[in-house]
Structures are given as structure tokens and as C-alpha cells.
Length: 469
Image 1: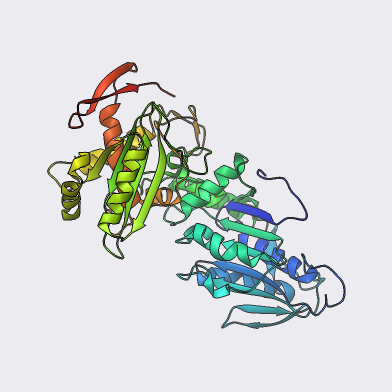
Image 2: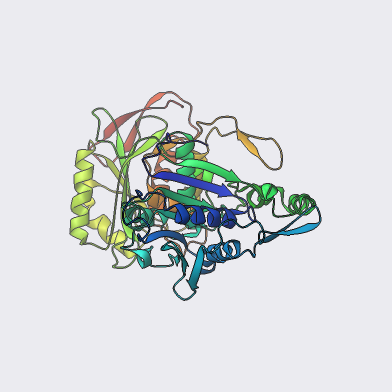
């Protein structure tokens, strides 16, 4: 395990990435039974027996959330069975908690115990956990959390607030899934925990460790998966984060972007800045995104970000002009491919915006995406060990850094070349900026030079120190 130090008084935050059929749901069932039976977090004394103690098991998938209740009921009614060494076993005659189960309401996902404890199974679905808003709990487990469309928002707005009364455990658990909308945030939390940057305890879980499946069957299934696809086998068997090439940017190179900074940086004297802009002023559409880059040295760094959905164009221009002024008269590059971008270019002609025409002739957009990936992976060298496992020989690879931007992280993780149905505003601002960085640095020799970075701005000359990480 990695992460923050254990304190029995505080809330325990746990995160588990495990393989398919590794026994995740059985584990959750046992944890819920234990917490409900002992009412962990409640001080014994008058009223203890009558106190209605709650535990929550939530999931983006309704069926998955209710599966935990089924296991709890089977265990407490002595119907849980498994095989070992060719023989089937049952917990019917070894059950210690007799008469603890009271009843279940399938419609609302409620399972009741005889001590006034209750376990709820909720599907977060599209309501971001609002279905259990207002109810306190001693434990919240979030099963298959990387399939959530908005995990970070759910944790902040609904999950942690349920644990404020007597909560003792919050557990995120999932098998990594490249298609999961919150896969990158899940990966980010694990990376931070291993670096000691958050309080999560990290656990793994393997299909090969599931004692409720015969050992011979496990070995046979493992070999079948390896023969079919050794890389995907790591995800299915061990819960590893793998890339199948479905997305343009895979999890490790996205994670390498982030510094330990929790917020942006103020401008520094003598530093050169560039602002990349993607306009999205339609109500209900994409956001307008401004990314401020410190381009003084390599690696370049995104030091400030601003995003807003809809909004008054003149208000947005006011924010942009303020950023240009504050960040040392920053250079600005913007998407001019659509009609809105063309109009904004005319309205901002006094600050001489550099055009990026993604809708123009040629492969401007495709090239920019390519440049972004090259810059993110610069100097990366990997060495394959076994079963598709790769080791980074240069952990500090890449020429781009940023403080953590969750929207950019999530959009990069799900971005595909055919992006018509995807949220792409933050990615667009990112690759627009990357296209300029490539023109500035590219594969040029690493030496100090002076460049006319914007020939339209009073022949301004900026010294760029090309130093590698």
C-alpha cells in the first residue's frame, strides 16, 4: 500500500484497481456486513442499538450496484457456495451471523439488518449521486468508478459529504477500462497516492488470487487471455492500466504532464508567455478555453487555464486581454477555422492574434495533434519486461508540463481522431498551443537563440533558452 498515514480517528480513503473476476464484489459485501454489524464509527452507549446505521454501495451501472446486495443476502442466509479441489462448499453450516439479515426492498435497492443497520445500492447514473443526497453513511464504496462520467464532481459534491457524520471508509474500486470517462482521473488518484501526494491507500487485486475459482481454471483462463492479447491480459487479470490504441493519448503520457502544483502560477519577470485559445461561445456547447503557457525554457509549462461555457463575447475578450497584459504582453494564438473565430480575430486585431485554421486546407489539425503527442513523449524510452509490461527508462520524459487540469486530463484520455461526438474544447486549446511550441522548438539544436516570435508586434524579439529536461 502507498499513501497517507493511517489514523484510526480519520476517514480512511482507499482505492483499488483490480482484475475482472478478482472477487471485488465479494470483498465489498464482506466489508458492508462488518461495518453494518459493528456500526463502525458510532460511539456505544444509550441509543446505540436503536441508531439507524447506513452503508452505501454505489456504481454508475445499476446492475453492478445491486450485485453487492445479492452477495450480502446469499452470505447472511447461508447460500454462498464455491468450489475447491474439485469439491463444492457452502457457508450454510459455518455461518456465524445467524438472524442478522432482516429483509430487502429490491425496488429502492435497500437491504435491512436486525440491528437497524441498512445497506443501500445506488446507481449514480446521470444525477452525479444526487439519489442519495442528504443521507449520512458509515461507509461509501464506489464500484466500477472509472465508468462514471464525472467522478471528480461526484466525490466533491455528494460522496464525501455523506461521510461527515460518522463515516469511516470511502473506497473507490474498479477494473481499469480505456473507454471509461473517468479512467484518467482514477489513474491520476492512484499515481498521486503512490507519490504520497494524497491520502489514499492503494490496493491491487488479481483474478489469479480469487480463491473461489478453481486454480486449474484460473491458470487455463490466464493462458487463453495471454495467447489472445498479452497486453489486454494484464488489464483483465491484474487490473493494470493498458493502452490498446483506441485513444490518441494513453494514460501514462497524460499523467506525465502534471507537476505537483495544485494551482496555476503568477507571471514572472523576464519570462515569455503564449496563450492558446479555443472559442466555444454557443450556449450549451463547448467551453471557451484559454491556456497560458510559459515558453521561456523547455519543458514549456501551462501555468494558467480558464474555461467558460457560453458567455458574452465581450466579457471573454476582456478576460483574454487581461491575461495578455498580465502575462508580460503574451503572444496569442487562436482557432480561426470557424465563423466565430474569424469574427473574434477581427475584434482582437489590436493584439495581433496568430491564426490557427483547423478547418482550412491541408492537415493543420492532424499535424497539430501529432506535434502535441511528439512533445508529450519527447525523449521517452520504454523497455519491455514480460507479458506486455513496459518500464520507463526515462521517467521524466516530455517537453510539456502543467498543474493538474481535470477537464484537460479527461478529454485527452477519451480523445479520438474522429472527435465529432466528443467534448474537445480543452484538447483543442492544447494542440493549438502545441502547434506553436513545435514551431518554436521542434527538433532545433539546443542553444540560446533569438526569434521574432510575432513579426507583427513592433518587431518584438524574445530570447528563448532551449534547454532540455
